[in-house]
Length: 518
Image 1 (cartoon, rainbow, N blue to C red):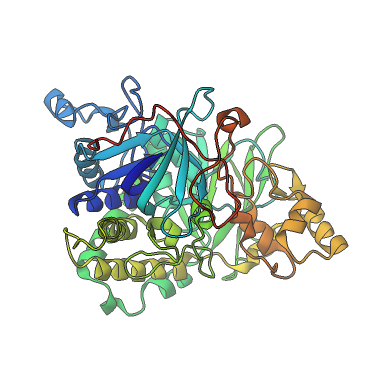
Image 2: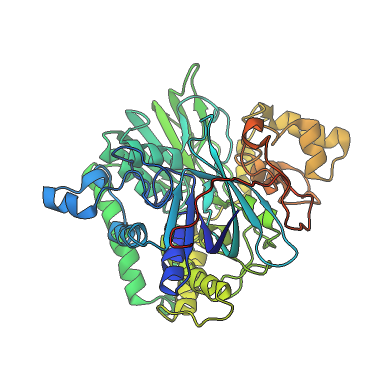
Protein backbone atom coordinates (compact mmCIF):
# COMPACT_ATOMS: atom_id res chain seq x y z
CA UNK A 1 0.00 0.00 0.00
CA UNK A 2 1.40 3.39 -1.02
CA UNK A 3 1.02 6.33 1.32
CA UNK A 4 0.66 9.66 -0.49
CA UNK A 5 0.09 13.29 0.46
CA UNK A 6 -2.50 14.08 -2.21
CA UNK A 7 -4.05 11.54 -4.57
CA UNK A 8 -5.86 12.99 -7.60
CA UNK A 9 -8.21 10.76 -9.60
CA UNK A 10 -8.75 12.05 -13.12
CA UNK A 11 -6.40 13.98 -15.41
CA UNK A 12 -8.80 16.28 -17.23
CA UNK A 13 -8.79 20.05 -16.67
CA UNK A 14 -9.88 19.78 -13.02
CA UNK A 15 -7.48 16.97 -12.13
CA UNK A 16 -4.48 18.56 -13.81
CA UNK A 17 -5.18 21.91 -12.15
CA UNK A 18 -5.61 20.20 -8.77
CA UNK A 19 -2.35 18.27 -9.10
CA UNK A 20 -0.44 21.41 -10.09
CA UNK A 21 -1.94 23.51 -7.28
CA UNK A 22 -1.14 20.81 -4.73
CA UNK A 23 2.47 20.67 -5.91
CA UNK A 24 2.81 24.45 -5.75
CA UNK A 25 1.57 24.18 -2.18
CA UNK A 26 4.32 21.70 -1.34
CA UNK A 27 2.45 18.38 -1.34
CA UNK A 28 3.72 15.25 -3.01
CA UNK A 29 1.14 14.10 -5.53
CA UNK A 30 0.05 10.97 -7.34
CA UNK A 31 -2.16 11.62 -10.39
CA UNK A 32 -4.22 8.71 -11.74
CA UNK A 33 -6.03 8.46 -15.05
CA UNK A 34 -7.59 5.51 -16.88
CA UNK A 35 -6.48 6.80 -20.27
CA UNK A 36 -3.06 6.30 -21.82
CA UNK A 37 -2.64 10.08 -22.12
CA UNK A 38 -3.46 13.12 -20.01
CA UNK A 39 -6.12 15.69 -20.80
CA UNK A 40 -9.45 13.99 -20.25
CA UNK A 41 -12.23 14.32 -22.79
CA UNK A 42 -11.80 18.08 -23.15
CA UNK A 43 -8.16 17.78 -24.23
CA UNK A 44 -8.42 14.34 -25.76
CA UNK A 45 -5.75 13.54 -28.33
CA UNK A 46 -3.81 10.64 -29.77
CA UNK A 47 -0.91 9.00 -27.96
CA UNK A 48 2.29 8.72 -29.98
CA UNK A 49 5.60 7.04 -29.58
CA UNK A 50 6.37 3.78 -27.86
CA UNK A 51 4.44 2.96 -24.73
CA UNK A 52 6.42 3.33 -21.54
CA UNK A 53 5.77 1.64 -18.22
CA UNK A 54 3.27 3.40 -16.00
CA UNK A 55 4.62 5.84 -13.50
CA UNK A 56 6.38 9.16 -13.75
CA UNK A 57 7.51 8.67 -17.37
CA UNK A 58 4.28 9.14 -19.35
CA UNK A 59 3.88 7.34 -22.65
CA UNK A 60 3.11 9.47 -25.68
CA UNK A 61 4.83 12.68 -24.54
CA UNK A 62 8.25 13.26 -26.05
CA UNK A 63 10.00 16.43 -24.98
CA UNK A 64 7.89 19.46 -25.98
CA UNK A 65 11.02 21.21 -27.24
CA UNK A 66 11.68 18.50 -29.81
CA UNK A 67 8.47 19.46 -31.63
CA UNK A 68 9.40 23.13 -31.62
CA UNK A 69 12.82 22.30 -33.01
CA UNK A 70 11.30 20.24 -35.77
CA UNK A 71 8.91 23.02 -36.69
CA UNK A 72 5.78 20.99 -35.98
CA UNK A 73 3.26 20.65 -33.23
CA UNK A 74 4.02 16.97 -32.79
CA UNK A 75 1.28 14.56 -31.78
CA UNK A 76 -1.23 17.32 -31.18
CA UNK A 77 -1.38 18.77 -34.71
CA UNK A 78 -4.27 16.66 -35.98
CA UNK A 79 -7.17 18.32 -34.14
CA UNK A 80 -8.24 21.80 -33.03
CA UNK A 81 -8.17 22.23 -29.25
CA UNK A 82 -9.42 25.10 -27.13
CA UNK A 83 -7.06 26.34 -24.39
CA UNK A 84 -4.40 23.96 -25.70
CA UNK A 85 -1.54 26.09 -24.40
CA UNK A 86 -2.98 25.81 -20.88
CA UNK A 87 -2.95 22.05 -21.20
CA UNK A 88 0.61 21.81 -22.52
CA UNK A 89 1.81 24.08 -19.70
CA UNK A 90 0.13 21.93 -17.04
CA UNK A 91 1.33 18.73 -18.68
CA UNK A 92 4.92 19.92 -18.92
CA UNK A 93 5.00 21.14 -15.32
CA UNK A 94 3.66 17.87 -13.93
CA UNK A 95 5.57 15.40 -16.11
CA UNK A 96 8.88 17.12 -15.28
CA UNK A 97 8.17 17.26 -11.54
CA UNK A 98 9.96 14.55 -9.56
CA UNK A 99 7.43 14.86 -6.73
CA UNK A 100 4.42 14.20 -8.96
CA UNK A 101 3.96 10.58 -9.96
CA UNK A 102 1.67 10.17 -12.96
CA UNK A 103 0.05 6.76 -13.39
CA UNK A 104 -1.72 6.35 -16.72
CA UNK A 105 -3.85 3.35 -17.63
CA UNK A 106 -4.89 3.25 -13.95
CA UNK A 107 -8.44 2.07 -13.46
CA UNK A 108 -9.88 2.79 -10.02
CA UNK A 109 -12.20 -0.16 -9.37
CA UNK A 110 -13.08 0.23 -5.69
CA UNK A 111 -12.55 2.35 -2.59
CA UNK A 112 -12.66 1.33 1.08
CA UNK A 113 -14.08 3.87 3.52
CA UNK A 114 -12.21 4.49 6.74
CA UNK A 115 -13.47 5.67 10.11
CA UNK A 116 -11.52 8.90 9.73
CA UNK A 117 -10.02 10.50 6.67
CA UNK A 118 -10.18 9.72 2.98
CA UNK A 119 -10.73 6.17 1.73
CA UNK A 120 -8.20 3.62 0.54
CA UNK A 121 -8.17 3.59 -3.26
CA UNK A 122 -7.76 0.35 -5.26
CA UNK A 123 -6.48 0.48 -8.83
CA UNK A 124 -5.56 -1.88 -11.64
CA UNK A 125 -2.82 -0.55 -13.91
CA UNK A 126 -2.52 -1.64 -17.52
CA UNK A 127 -4.74 -2.11 -20.60
CA UNK A 128 -8.37 -2.76 -19.67
CA UNK A 129 -8.39 -5.95 -21.76
CA UNK A 130 -4.95 -7.08 -20.59
CA UNK A 131 -4.40 -10.24 -18.59
CA UNK A 132 -1.51 -8.98 -16.46
CA UNK A 133 -2.70 -5.73 -14.95
CA UNK A 134 -0.82 -4.69 -11.83
CA UNK A 135 -2.65 -3.93 -8.61
CA UNK A 136 -1.82 -0.78 -6.68
CA UNK A 137 -3.44 0.52 -3.52
CA UNK A 138 -3.13 4.10 -2.27
CA UNK A 139 -3.69 5.46 1.21
CA UNK A 140 -3.90 9.24 0.71
CA UNK A 141 -3.79 11.94 3.34
CA UNK A 142 -6.09 13.92 1.06
CA UNK A 143 -8.05 12.78 -1.99
CA UNK A 144 -9.23 14.90 -4.93
CA UNK A 145 -11.88 13.27 -7.11
CA UNK A 146 -12.01 14.82 -10.58
CA UNK A 147 -13.65 12.07 -12.60
CA UNK A 148 -15.64 14.36 -14.88
CA UNK A 149 -18.92 13.37 -16.48
CA UNK A 150 -20.37 11.04 -19.04
CA UNK A 151 -22.73 12.05 -21.78
CA UNK A 152 -26.49 11.86 -21.57
CA UNK A 153 -28.44 10.91 -24.66
CA UNK A 154 -32.24 10.88 -24.64
CA UNK A 155 -33.77 7.82 -26.32
CA UNK A 156 -35.90 8.00 -29.45
CA UNK A 157 -37.10 5.32 -31.91
CA UNK A 158 -34.07 3.95 -33.78
CA UNK A 159 -31.40 5.40 -31.49
CA UNK A 160 -29.97 1.89 -31.07
CA UNK A 161 -29.18 1.55 -34.79
CA UNK A 162 -25.52 1.32 -35.86
CA UNK A 163 -24.45 4.76 -37.01
CA UNK A 164 -26.14 6.60 -34.13
CA UNK A 165 -23.37 7.95 -31.90
CA UNK A 166 -23.21 10.13 -28.88
CA UNK A 167 -21.72 13.51 -29.68
CA UNK A 168 -18.90 12.79 -27.24
CA UNK A 169 -18.02 9.52 -28.97
CA UNK A 170 -17.82 11.30 -32.31
CA UNK A 171 -15.58 13.96 -30.80
CA UNK A 172 -13.38 11.35 -29.12
CA UNK A 173 -12.82 9.55 -32.42
CA UNK A 174 -12.07 12.82 -34.21
CA UNK A 175 -9.69 14.11 -31.53
CA UNK A 176 -8.08 10.85 -30.51
CA UNK A 177 -7.83 9.03 -33.82
CA UNK A 178 -8.52 11.60 -36.54
CA UNK A 179 -11.48 9.48 -37.69
CA UNK A 180 -14.89 10.72 -38.84
CA UNK A 181 -17.90 8.63 -37.77
CA UNK A 182 -19.46 9.03 -41.21
CA UNK A 183 -19.36 10.91 -44.48
CA UNK A 184 -22.73 12.64 -44.17
CA UNK A 185 -23.36 13.46 -40.51
CA UNK A 186 -26.02 15.34 -38.54
CA UNK A 187 -25.19 16.73 -35.08
CA UNK A 188 -28.17 17.16 -32.74
CA UNK A 189 -29.10 17.66 -29.10
CA UNK A 190 -28.62 20.69 -26.90
CA UNK A 191 -25.88 22.90 -25.52
CA UNK A 192 -22.69 24.61 -26.69
CA UNK A 193 -20.93 21.23 -26.87
CA UNK A 194 -22.58 20.57 -30.25
CA UNK A 195 -20.47 23.28 -31.88
CA UNK A 196 -16.99 21.86 -31.17
CA UNK A 197 -18.29 18.41 -32.11
CA UNK A 198 -19.44 19.66 -35.51
CA UNK A 199 -16.21 21.61 -35.99
CA UNK A 200 -14.15 18.54 -35.11
CA UNK A 201 -16.05 16.44 -37.64
CA UNK A 202 -15.38 19.01 -40.34
CA UNK A 203 -11.71 18.96 -39.42
CA UNK A 204 -11.44 15.22 -40.09
CA UNK A 205 -13.27 15.37 -43.42
CA UNK A 206 -16.93 14.69 -42.64
CA UNK A 207 -19.73 16.55 -44.38
CA UNK A 208 -21.90 17.98 -41.59
CA UNK A 209 -25.41 18.40 -43.01
CA UNK A 210 -26.61 20.43 -40.05
CA UNK A 211 -26.53 21.21 -36.32
CA UNK A 212 -29.91 20.84 -34.62
CA UNK A 213 -30.30 22.59 -31.23
CA UNK A 214 -33.36 21.72 -29.12
CA UNK A 215 -33.58 25.08 -27.35
CA UNK A 216 -35.28 27.88 -29.26
CA UNK A 217 -33.63 31.26 -29.81
CA UNK A 218 -36.14 32.72 -27.34
CA UNK A 219 -35.16 30.29 -24.59
CA UNK A 220 -31.45 30.72 -25.34
CA UNK A 221 -31.84 34.48 -25.02
CA UNK A 222 -33.81 34.13 -21.76
CA UNK A 223 -31.01 32.00 -20.35
CA UNK A 224 -27.96 33.98 -21.43
CA UNK A 225 -28.98 37.65 -21.61
CA UNK A 226 -30.54 38.70 -18.25
CA UNK A 227 -28.40 40.86 -15.95
CA UNK A 228 -25.44 41.23 -18.33
CA UNK A 229 -23.72 43.48 -15.77
CA UNK A 230 -23.01 40.37 -13.67
CA UNK A 231 -20.62 39.01 -16.30
CA UNK A 232 -17.02 40.18 -16.49
CA UNK A 233 -16.06 41.66 -19.87
CA UNK A 234 -12.99 39.39 -19.86
CA UNK A 235 -15.16 36.26 -19.51
CA UNK A 236 -17.60 37.46 -22.16
CA UNK A 237 -14.74 38.18 -24.55
CA UNK A 238 -13.18 34.76 -23.95
CA UNK A 239 -16.43 32.89 -24.49
CA UNK A 240 -17.37 35.05 -27.47
CA UNK A 241 -14.01 34.41 -29.09
CA UNK A 242 -14.42 30.67 -28.62
CA UNK A 243 -17.99 30.78 -29.95
CA UNK A 244 -16.94 32.92 -32.89
CA UNK A 245 -14.31 30.37 -33.88
CA UNK A 246 -16.85 27.57 -34.02
CA UNK A 247 -19.50 29.65 -35.79
CA UNK A 248 -16.94 30.84 -38.31
CA UNK A 249 -15.85 27.27 -39.09
CA UNK A 250 -19.48 26.23 -39.65
CA UNK A 251 -20.24 29.33 -41.74
CA UNK A 252 -17.28 28.77 -44.07
CA UNK A 253 -18.61 25.28 -44.83
CA UNK A 254 -22.21 26.55 -44.97
CA UNK A 255 -23.40 24.19 -42.25
CA UNK A 256 -27.00 25.08 -41.29
CA UNK A 257 -27.73 25.70 -37.59
CA UNK A 258 -31.33 25.08 -36.56
CA UNK A 259 -32.87 25.84 -33.16
CA UNK A 260 -36.10 24.67 -31.52
CA UNK A 261 -35.87 21.26 -33.19
CA UNK A 262 -34.82 17.70 -32.38
CA UNK A 263 -34.12 14.31 -33.90
CA UNK A 264 -37.20 12.29 -32.94
CA UNK A 265 -36.51 9.10 -34.93
CA UNK A 266 -33.72 7.32 -36.81
CA UNK A 267 -34.39 5.02 -39.76
CA UNK A 268 -32.59 2.12 -41.38
CA UNK A 269 -32.25 -1.65 -41.43
CA UNK A 270 -28.63 -2.66 -40.79
CA UNK A 271 -27.58 0.91 -39.96
CA UNK A 272 -28.97 4.42 -39.94
CA UNK A 273 -29.77 5.86 -43.36
CA UNK A 274 -31.98 8.79 -42.39
CA UNK A 275 -33.38 10.70 -39.41
CA UNK A 276 -36.60 12.58 -38.75
CA UNK A 277 -36.17 16.10 -37.40
CA UNK A 278 -39.22 17.90 -35.98
CA UNK A 279 -39.89 21.34 -34.58
CA UNK A 280 -40.49 21.22 -30.81
CA UNK A 281 -42.17 23.45 -28.24
CA UNK A 282 -40.31 25.11 -25.37
CA UNK A 283 -40.94 22.01 -23.25
CA UNK A 284 -39.59 19.84 -26.13
CA UNK A 285 -42.89 18.32 -27.26
CA UNK A 286 -42.81 17.73 -31.04
CA UNK A 287 -45.10 19.92 -33.14
CA UNK A 288 -47.31 17.84 -35.41
CA UNK A 289 -46.79 18.33 -39.12
CA UNK A 290 -43.27 19.76 -38.81
CA UNK A 291 -41.38 16.50 -39.41
CA UNK A 292 -38.60 16.54 -41.98
CA UNK A 293 -36.61 13.50 -43.14
CA UNK A 294 -32.87 13.97 -43.72
CA UNK A 295 -30.61 11.37 -45.33
CA UNK A 296 -27.45 10.64 -43.33
CA UNK A 297 -25.03 7.80 -42.74
CA UNK A 298 -24.33 8.87 -39.16
CA UNK A 299 -25.98 11.02 -36.50
CA UNK A 300 -24.31 12.36 -33.35
CA UNK A 301 -26.65 13.14 -30.47
CA UNK A 302 -25.89 14.72 -27.10
CA UNK A 303 -28.25 16.18 -24.49
CA UNK A 304 -25.77 17.36 -21.90
CA UNK A 305 -23.78 15.45 -19.29
CA UNK A 306 -24.24 13.48 -16.09
CA UNK A 307 -21.62 13.72 -13.31
CA UNK A 308 -19.50 10.56 -13.03
CA UNK A 309 -20.00 10.05 -9.31
CA UNK A 310 -19.41 6.32 -8.77
CA UNK A 311 -16.16 6.79 -6.84
CA UNK A 312 -17.53 9.73 -4.84
CA UNK A 313 -20.62 7.74 -3.85
CA UNK A 314 -18.51 4.75 -2.82
CA UNK A 315 -16.39 7.11 -0.71
CA UNK A 316 -19.55 8.27 1.08
CA UNK A 317 -19.78 11.77 -0.40
CA UNK A 318 -23.19 13.44 -0.14
CA UNK A 319 -24.92 14.51 -3.36
CA UNK A 320 -27.10 17.48 -4.27
CA UNK A 321 -30.63 17.15 -5.63
CA UNK A 322 -29.33 17.13 -9.21
CA UNK A 323 -27.00 14.20 -8.53
CA UNK A 324 -23.71 16.10 -8.39
CA UNK A 325 -21.27 15.97 -5.46
CA UNK A 326 -21.96 18.55 -2.76
CA UNK A 327 -18.93 20.74 -1.95
CA UNK A 328 -18.21 23.86 0.07
CA UNK A 329 -16.23 26.95 -0.93
CA UNK A 330 -12.94 25.03 -0.73
CA UNK A 331 -14.26 22.04 -2.70
CA UNK A 332 -14.53 19.90 0.46
CA UNK A 333 -17.08 17.09 0.30
CA UNK A 334 -19.01 15.69 3.25
CA UNK A 335 -16.19 13.17 3.85
CA UNK A 336 -13.17 14.57 5.75
CA UNK A 337 -10.10 14.76 3.55
CA UNK A 338 -12.01 14.20 0.30
CA UNK A 339 -12.34 17.02 -2.23
CA UNK A 340 -14.17 17.13 -5.55
CA UNK A 341 -13.65 19.34 -8.59
CA UNK A 342 -14.88 19.68 -12.13
CA UNK A 343 -17.99 18.24 -13.71
CA UNK A 344 -18.80 15.90 -10.81
CA UNK A 345 -19.75 18.98 -8.74
CA UNK A 346 -22.06 20.24 -11.51
CA UNK A 347 -21.68 20.56 -15.27
CA UNK A 348 -19.99 23.87 -16.01
CA UNK A 349 -17.25 23.54 -18.63
CA UNK A 350 -13.47 23.69 -18.64
CA UNK A 351 -13.03 27.16 -17.13
CA UNK A 352 -15.03 26.20 -14.05
CA UNK A 353 -13.24 22.85 -13.84
CA UNK A 354 -9.83 24.54 -13.90
CA UNK A 355 -10.85 27.02 -11.19
CA UNK A 356 -12.34 24.29 -8.98
CA UNK A 357 -9.29 22.10 -9.52
CA UNK A 358 -6.94 24.83 -8.32
CA UNK A 359 -9.07 25.44 -5.22
CA UNK A 360 -9.30 21.72 -4.45
CA UNK A 361 -5.57 21.14 -4.94
CA UNK A 362 -4.60 23.95 -2.56
CA UNK A 363 -7.09 22.83 0.08
CA UNK A 364 -6.04 19.18 -0.21
CA UNK A 365 -2.38 20.10 0.18
CA UNK A 366 -3.22 22.07 3.31
CA UNK A 367 -5.10 19.08 4.71
CA UNK A 368 -2.21 16.73 3.91
CA UNK A 369 0.23 19.03 5.70
CA UNK A 370 -2.00 19.24 8.80
CA UNK A 371 -2.68 22.92 8.44
CA UNK A 372 0.39 24.15 6.54
CA UNK A 373 -0.57 27.43 4.79
CA UNK A 374 -1.30 26.79 1.12
CA UNK A 375 0.85 28.69 -1.37
CA UNK A 376 -0.16 29.58 -4.88
CA UNK A 377 -2.56 32.04 -6.45
CA UNK A 378 -5.25 33.49 -4.22
CA UNK A 379 -8.81 34.39 -5.16
CA UNK A 380 -9.82 30.92 -6.26
CA UNK A 381 -13.18 31.04 -4.52
CA UNK A 382 -14.24 34.22 -6.34
CA UNK A 383 -13.17 32.73 -9.65
CA UNK A 384 -15.16 29.55 -8.98
CA UNK A 385 -18.24 31.59 -8.06
CA UNK A 386 -17.95 33.62 -11.26
CA UNK A 387 -17.68 30.58 -13.49
CA UNK A 388 -20.53 28.83 -11.69
CA UNK A 389 -22.75 31.82 -12.44
CA UNK A 390 -21.82 31.46 -16.10
CA UNK A 391 -22.66 27.75 -15.93
CA UNK A 392 -26.07 28.58 -14.43
CA UNK A 393 -26.84 30.68 -17.50
CA UNK A 394 -25.93 27.77 -19.73
CA UNK A 395 -28.29 25.43 -17.86
CA UNK A 396 -31.16 27.90 -18.09
CA UNK A 397 -30.60 28.22 -21.82
CA UNK A 398 -29.99 24.56 -22.70
CA UNK A 399 -31.34 22.37 -19.88
CA UNK A 400 -33.41 19.28 -20.72
CA UNK A 401 -37.18 19.82 -20.74
CA UNK A 402 -39.80 17.18 -19.81
CA UNK A 403 -41.56 17.05 -23.19
CA UNK A 404 -38.83 14.72 -24.52
CA UNK A 405 -40.76 11.79 -23.03
CA UNK A 406 -43.28 12.14 -25.86
CA UNK A 407 -40.57 11.10 -28.34
CA UNK A 408 -40.52 7.64 -26.76
CA UNK A 409 -43.07 5.11 -28.02
CA UNK A 410 -43.65 1.65 -26.52
CA UNK A 411 -41.15 -0.05 -28.84
CA UNK A 412 -38.31 2.40 -28.12
CA UNK A 413 -35.35 0.70 -26.46
CA UNK A 414 -34.53 2.46 -23.20
CA UNK A 415 -31.77 0.20 -21.83
CA UNK A 416 -29.53 -0.73 -24.75
CA UNK A 417 -27.39 -3.23 -22.84
CA UNK A 418 -30.37 -5.41 -21.87
CA UNK A 419 -32.66 -4.45 -24.79
CA UNK A 420 -35.38 -3.19 -22.44
CA UNK A 421 -38.13 -1.21 -24.18
CA UNK A 422 -40.20 1.57 -22.69
CA UNK A 423 -43.26 -0.71 -22.73
CA UNK A 424 -41.42 -3.43 -20.78
CA UNK A 425 -40.11 -0.91 -18.27
CA UNK A 426 -43.53 0.58 -17.61
CA UNK A 427 -45.18 -2.84 -17.46
CA UNK A 428 -42.67 -4.03 -14.86
CA UNK A 429 -43.24 -0.92 -12.77
CA UNK A 430 -47.03 -1.38 -12.93
CA UNK A 431 -47.04 -5.15 -12.33
CA UNK A 432 -44.72 -5.05 -9.34
CA UNK A 433 -45.78 -1.72 -7.89
CA UNK A 434 -42.07 -0.92 -7.63
CA UNK A 435 -41.27 2.25 -5.73
CA UNK A 436 -37.51 1.63 -5.68
CA UNK A 437 -34.97 1.43 -8.47
CA UNK A 438 -33.33 -1.72 -7.13
CA UNK A 439 -36.52 -3.76 -7.38
CA UNK A 440 -37.30 -2.22 -10.76
CA UNK A 441 -33.85 -3.14 -12.07
CA UNK A 442 -34.33 -6.74 -10.98
CA UNK A 443 -37.82 -7.03 -12.47
CA UNK A 444 -37.20 -5.19 -15.76
CA UNK A 445 -33.41 -5.67 -16.11
CA UNK A 446 -33.00 -2.00 -17.01
CA UNK A 447 -29.57 -0.93 -15.77
CA UNK A 448 -28.24 -4.46 -15.19
CA UNK A 449 -26.05 -4.56 -18.31
CA UNK A 450 -22.37 -3.88 -18.87
CA UNK A 451 -22.70 -0.10 -18.47
CA UNK A 452 -24.57 -0.56 -15.17
CA UNK A 453 -27.04 2.21 -15.92
CA UNK A 454 -24.55 4.87 -17.03
CA UNK A 455 -26.39 5.29 -20.33
CA UNK A 456 -29.98 4.66 -19.26
CA UNK A 457 -30.07 5.50 -15.55
CA UNK A 458 -31.37 9.07 -15.66
CA UNK A 459 -33.72 8.25 -18.54
CA UNK A 460 -35.22 5.28 -16.67
CA UNK A 461 -35.92 7.49 -13.66
CA UNK A 462 -37.49 10.22 -15.80
CA UNK A 463 -39.73 7.81 -17.71
CA UNK A 464 -41.35 6.40 -14.57
CA UNK A 465 -44.82 7.79 -13.77
CA UNK A 466 -43.70 8.79 -10.27
CA UNK A 467 -40.24 9.57 -8.92
CA UNK A 468 -38.61 6.52 -7.26
CA UNK A 469 -37.98 6.52 -3.53
CA UNK A 470 -34.25 5.99 -4.06
CA UNK A 471 -33.73 8.52 -6.83
CA UNK A 472 -30.16 8.44 -8.13
CA UNK A 473 -29.51 4.84 -7.08
CA UNK A 474 -28.48 3.95 -10.65
CA UNK A 475 -25.19 5.76 -9.95
CA UNK A 476 -24.32 3.55 -6.96
CA UNK A 477 -21.72 1.02 -8.11
CA UNK A 478 -19.49 -0.39 -5.30
CA UNK A 479 -17.44 -2.12 -8.02
CA UNK A 480 -16.82 0.98 -10.11
CA UNK A 481 -15.85 -0.76 -13.36
CA UNK A 482 -15.99 -4.36 -14.61
CA UNK A 483 -12.93 -6.34 -13.44
CA UNK A 484 -11.77 -9.90 -13.95
CA UNK A 485 -12.06 -12.18 -10.94
CA UNK A 486 -8.51 -13.28 -11.72
CA UNK A 487 -7.27 -9.70 -11.25
CA UNK A 488 -8.46 -9.61 -7.65
CA UNK A 489 -8.68 -13.28 -6.65
CA UNK A 490 -5.41 -13.31 -4.67
CA UNK A 491 -5.98 -9.99 -2.92
CA UNK A 492 -6.11 -10.09 0.89
CA UNK A 493 -8.61 -8.11 2.99
CA UNK A 494 -7.54 -4.59 3.92
CA UNK A 495 -6.15 -4.02 7.40
CA UNK A 496 -7.68 -0.54 7.62
CA UNK A 497 -11.06 -0.49 9.37
CA UNK A 498 -14.01 0.24 7.14
CA UNK A 499 -17.39 1.76 7.86
CA UNK A 500 -18.94 -0.42 5.17
CA UNK A 501 -18.51 -4.03 4.10
CA UNK A 502 -14.89 -4.05 2.92
CA UNK A 503 -14.01 -4.88 -0.65
CA UNK A 504 -10.88 -6.93 -1.35
CA UNK A 505 -7.73 -4.90 -0.72
CA UNK A 506 -4.24 -5.20 -2.16
CA UNK A 507 -0.89 -5.97 -0.59
CA UNK A 508 1.55 -5.92 -3.51
CA UNK A 509 5.01 -6.99 -2.37
CA UNK A 510 7.00 -5.23 -5.06
CA UNK A 511 5.16 -1.95 -5.52
CA UNK A 512 7.77 0.78 -6.00
CA UNK A 513 7.60 3.74 -3.64
CA UNK A 514 6.20 7.03 -4.85
CA UNK A 515 8.85 9.04 -6.63
CA UNK A 516 10.69 11.27 -4.19
CA UNK A 517 9.90 9.12 -1.15
CA UNK A 518 12.39 6.86 0.64
